[in-house]
Image: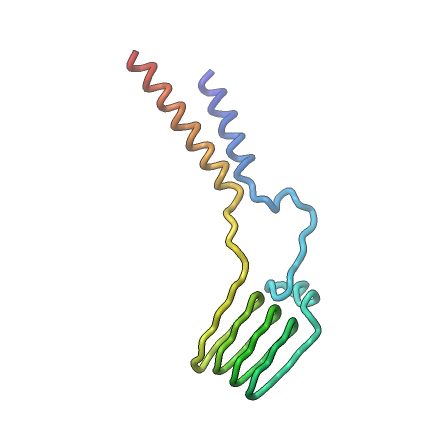
Amino acid sequence: MMKTSLIALSALAVTLAAPAEARRVTHKHFCNCGHSGGSKTCGSSSSTSTGGTTTSSGGTTTSSGGTTTTSGGTTTTSGGTTTTSGGTTTTSSGGSSTSSGGTAVPEPGVMGLMGLSLMALGVARRRQKRLAA
């Protein structure tokens, strides 16, 4: 009986530990995700400046001074201040950079492993009580 329970428990743990993407047939690439298909979803605007202030809502912004604010796309600066709420930011030659990208999400398998460990602790405690009696 105990072996059957452990085999069933192991099979359940493997099922729960599978990645979330294993069940999806298609997926979507986002702007600047690192895949060539992601560049197609980027905005079409592009701007280059050598000083002053540049504000962009998408596409690529390259600046060599001043302040750059963008809400998407890629920003490359060689000085000044850069504030971005998504995409990729590269800052060199001084200045400061503030980025508020995505939120880290734990793997779905973590919940399966945590549940398996709690069940294993329960089985160990139950076995310990039986041996003590």
